[in-house]
Image 1: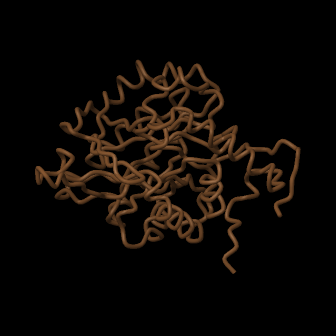
Image 2 (image 1 turned 180 degrees about the vertical axis):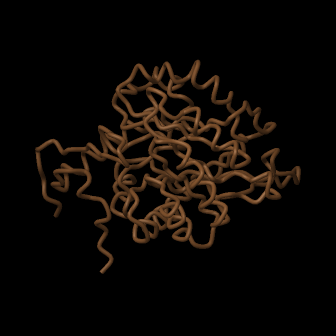
Image 3 (image 1 turned 45 degrees about the vertical axis):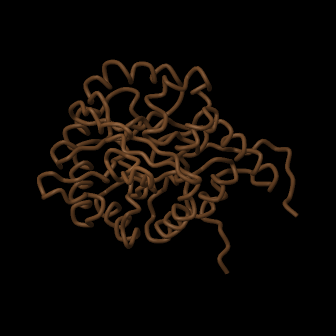
Length: 311
């Protein structure tokens, strides 16, 4: 039987130099820029907010339909729509500065120069605690090869971003690869301070009556509980391959889901698709993690990290 404790556990985490009051962040692309959810939850209670992806210039995104619900998950092909880094700094970040919650900015681009340009503009900006680098984008200058599925391309990109900023750099890894540990090692060698994994799995859905794809883009990113076992496996593998702290994500709905990622080796977690079905999901996960620690007599949340027993 699990041991019981009435002592309030310490949920605080220092993630790559970013102080988090608890290990629960909101995943990029599922929480807007924070303001969209502020009427539902107190943003001060979150460990951190990872904002929707920010690029050097505005991007309109893909045509609709862009979202399709799947069994235990969701396909999306939003196309990284965003107003660009200038608008983010002028009209999005000021709202988030009102809260005592770490703000991590997800950045992306379609060339190495675009990534570096965004990183430089965010460097030293008050209220920005770190950068999450989405490497699941095609490099238009290299024939469309996806940065996140080519180890050398990923290394060069992350090395360039690392040199462009003094902020903590967190590499968000793609699961659409054969060996996730090779990319974790590349990120570590490039000087990254942490990892986020996993990004969405590439998927597709077809309307069998119309015989057409459900998404205008044909394919999209699969997220939600359906991918959680894949995500937990990749976090476990990456944690054993490198010494970088990891933000685990992929279908987290409850505190126990978050504990699973932490036992696999994650030091923090991000709640994503759950936000669409339950605007309070991130708060529920925080409360669930606290209840888990009390139920099992865990004094510090970090005591869970990597403690899965495989023998």
